Amino acid sequence: MKKINRQIALFVLFLFLLNLFPLPQKTFGAWREPVRAKRGMVASQHELASKIGVEVLKKGGNAVDAAVAVALALAVVYPEAGNLGGGGFMIIRFKDGKTAAIDYREMAPAAATRDIFVDTEGNLIRGEGGSTVGYRASGVPGTPAGLDLAYQKYGSKKILWKDLVEPSRLLAQNGYVLSYRLAELFKSYKGTLEKYEDSKRIFLNGGKMFEEGDTLKQPELAATLGRMQKLGAKEFYTGRTAELIAEDMKRNKGLITLEDLKNYVAKERTPLRGTYRGYEILTMPPPSSGGIVMLQVLNMLEGYDLRKMGYNSAQKHHLVAEAMRRAFADRAEFMADPDFAEVPTAQLIDKNYAKKRAETINLTRATKSADIKAGEVTFSEGTETTHFTVVDAEGNMVSNTYTINDLYGSRVTAKGTGVLLNDEMDDFAARPGKPNLFGLIQGERNAVQPKKRPLSSMTPTIVLRKDGSVWFALGARGGPRIISAVLQSVINMIDYDMNIQEAIDAPRIHQQWFPDEVLYEPMGMSPDTLKILESLGQKFGDRPINIASATGIAIEEGTGVKFGAIDSRSDGEAIGY
Ligand code: DON
Image 1 (cartoon, rainbow, N blue to C red):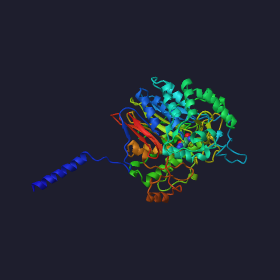
Image 2 (image 1 turned 90 degrees about the vertical axis):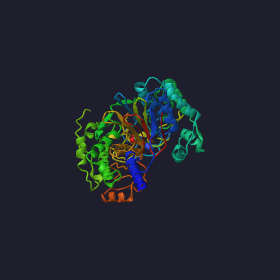
Image 3 (image 1 turned 120 degrees about the vertical axis):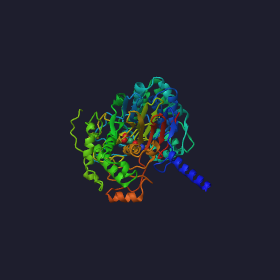
């Protein structure tokens, strides 16, 4: 009897302890913890780039210094998207609360006019010679100027420019071992890369192709980095590199001239600020649409109890899709380079505007995209991508997304430079009202104009706790799906208490007004849920696909421990120290 009593007592004690120390509750299947570090961390889509960034942090550089080194490294080790020949956006939040937004988006050459991608019959000129492949697809690159501005103005001044460039120059000169993924990716882009002599020689091994384990050396890129190392980033715009780019453009009927390169400037903008359930969000203003669209969707969702609806419920997916449909309709109409078109940013991210917009959402019936028009604003106001996140030991945070648009951009490597050029001209509304590479419809405001920056969806973002400290930062690659990935990760953190890895990995959806369909992911939605959503009038693409891929870093409250996450959908590594 005594023995039985003891067993019962032990069992009760066991239950009690279980309650005190419950097993960690995982929100969904993936059991991958974020990478943990006490001091600084870099989360990027290539291990070598993350390592280079962490070395800068260890030497006393701040998050901005490290971000510059990571961006230069990705240009060497992640040629599908890392770049010198593209552009992007950087959001910085310093530990003292100061913030910055650097716009180094590409700029249309002076000779680019509204209809350069429309033929005499009014058809869009795509592919070779058009807005996506070949010399005319490129805008004037912004990356070297953006990195230079970040370094000069916000770097720690403890690390010399030449030391930031050196690791990347060495990687380009001595080469690095190709992963299976990168070797295969070169093969799948063979059809277009092989049309451009330097691209073929460098990335396709002269046509013999690379295999996993081969070493990729990029001597011309090493030389370009060497010149920039000695003469500063301006060399890219005014030195031998600029001459080489302009000469190659001229030989091949491209539009970028020496004058265009000289005229390029990276611009500082004021980070866009919004809130979601009391958490402050810092993100990118135009010429990216990412920040506005994300904040609009979040504002619309704020009126609903998403937690109660349940993370993967049909009701929640329906609501998110409906909010996106409305925000993307506004994107098409109102968003563009703010230096060329009036963008009613403040009205679009206003909570009351979102409330009015959300009033048309029917929880039991999808609205047809054709029945949705842009919202009403008054205009009375004044006037292949990769994301990485860096945090230093002091808590300064950088959230950076940059791109050459399509994987391998225009596929053109400017002769003698090793620099792959972007095809960012396709982000303009080459023919307003007609879909671009990502199926996005865009309006007249985003038509091609000389020296204008094409509208982007890149959404580098930083979210603050209610006490004003940084909670997490993230961003993604994937065209307009970037916005969906970032905003749903934000919701996952705030409404569903996921950690940064779970938030980024969790299945998501995408709706961009037109085409009138909801994208979902493989294993991301049960057949039952699909059926319910169909019964509500949602339409779906013919197969599930991955929706963007993100990287991010969160900072633990109180301890300051950093947690880094790379999307399960892609390569990369978060490395801390
Ligand atoms: O700026 C934009 O929105 C696009 N050029 C981004 C392209 C992209 O994310 C491709 N990535 N895989």
